[in-house]
Length: 433
Image (cartoon, rainbow, N blue to C red; front, side, top):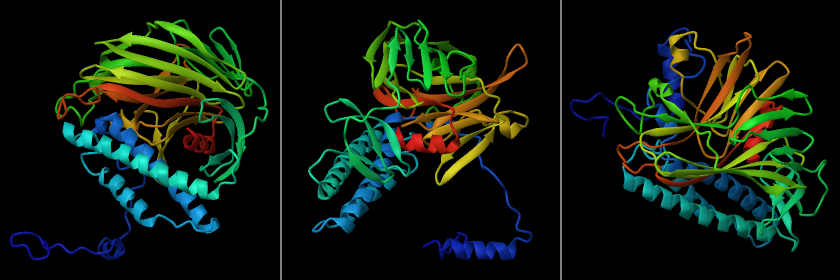
């Protein structure tokens, strides 16, 4: 229609290759912008409507798993037929909800209610496809399946919640047995130790210390997993924007109702921290260390009843990192941690998928998550002149427009700190979490 619409420029729809071939002819010198094309606006769309974003992330993971096992079954299991039509339909549903303004979290209320219902339906159907494919491959024995592209050796839970140690090859499976981990987890008061990391919680429930026992160094520069509640009042568009001035007003959540031991080894050590805050909101976090793993998980349940607020989780790390790396589609992007220029200063809220990595020569740390996208990375100069780096995840917001009840109610997600991490480690644990 746009090819001959009166009063409109003539538009011709072509393959991208044709466009770029013409562009090369018309634009001499092959001028190229190298790096990120960062939009200095609408930064809140990385976080608003957390349940919609979690539905998208979980759907992407589940679809990949279903395709992997369905393909394996189609190639190896007599009588199994690849469910092409079902997967095609489900992918179209997932991709539809990546449309503007659904995935950004800036639609009206009923759109997000419908999106959450659709994600739940996708999850149910995809899990049924996966179960059917795995059953077709089954030998009648209890097995652990690993859909990540790296070998995994870690503590898993059975269907009835019993922790067991398993070693499973990449894109494969193994028998579930009670193999012995390298070293069990010990729990002593508010201290978790598995021989690889030693984690100590303060009375207020924050991480007082995370010591990498292999590297023999303290990881944290200050309180870790510090929950900071900011006033979030953008000048224009509630669901779309986070304005820089939000950093000026905040409350640190330092009043813990309780810190209790909920797992005391040998495969898992875990402490539960409970807090009440704000307008009747509650947060329960379980900090878990597993045998044989450096990863420190923070399983989080929030009953959220705030208005015009944003909740951040901060990890100040004793690393002088010139840049951060964050996962994006098909790879990762590096961003400076300094604010030397106006466009670097404008990146006070950025996006990433499953992990953020910071490093100095010889040592790195990753912060991993299973749901959120928004985060910020900043540098702090200590009194002695040294420089540290803080990674903060944006957990949940409370905009009033266009959905006055946006993000209200219960949320459940997990994020983690991974000491001594390379980018390859961050990628592997991003799949695992």
